[in-house]
Amino acid sequence: MTARSLLAFLFIQLVAQPALANPQSEALFKKGQEAFENQRYRDSMRCYKRASRIDPADPKIYESLADVDLILDDLDSSIRDATTALSINPKMPFALTIRAKAYFAKNHLEACMSDLNKAIGSDPKYWEAYAMRSKLQCERKQWQPALLDCTKALDLRIKRDGANVSTSLYGDRGIILSRLNKWPAAIEDYTRAIRCEDDPNRLNRLYKDRATCYEKIGRHDLAAKDIQRCNKSTRADWEMILPN
Image 1 (cartoon, rainbow, N blue to C red):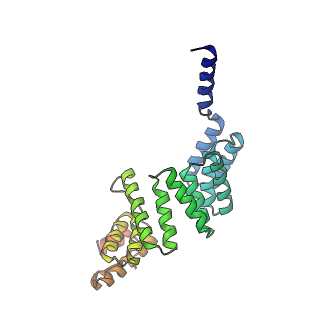
Image 2: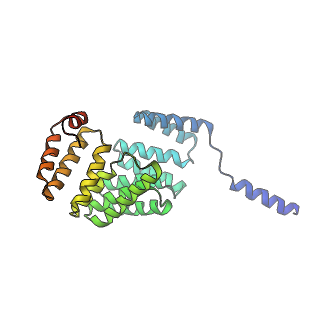
Image 3: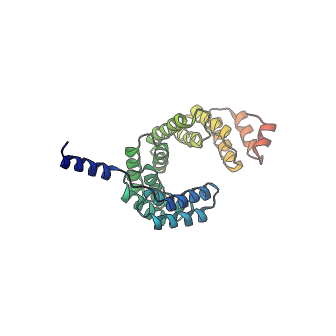
């Protein structure tokens, strides 16, 4: 190898190396993640913003900011921060999905669909994008495509986290199956969702929806039991008095 070719090789290797993370911004980013996990969203935002001032070229900081913005219902800021992340790295499925959720909340459905398609294109195994696209299709009353995407999201989630994963996707698919008049399949998914759910309000909704399905197939006795369950305040009450 000549001296010139050696220099060219070394230059290419140097350019190809990813930029080293700034230790100070990384520390702030991790602190922001900890605050986020503990639902201290304002503290999390402050950490992320400080980190972005130290390292403005790190897309994951803006992606995380966009996520916090969305939780705090600041849709415009969420779109702005996700767009900043994507201007640095256009193939970030999480950032694309966050921005899609913000667009959905603002009823910008075409922009929402575009971002979800891009997210799936960037990572075909990113289950959250399929789940969100299913929600969008439900909004448009496109029940069959919604069913396909919800099933895909559920399959990917199970492959990642195991068959006993606790997920609201069963309840979501139950709603779609109900709209398609697939009552036995809907009952099966509502039952799975009930086994995963601990929140009393969501349990109430699931029992009511399952009761409707039981009524549709003529099982008035089971529908009545589910309606009674809705009057109980906790899961423990339901399971003690009227076990599944």
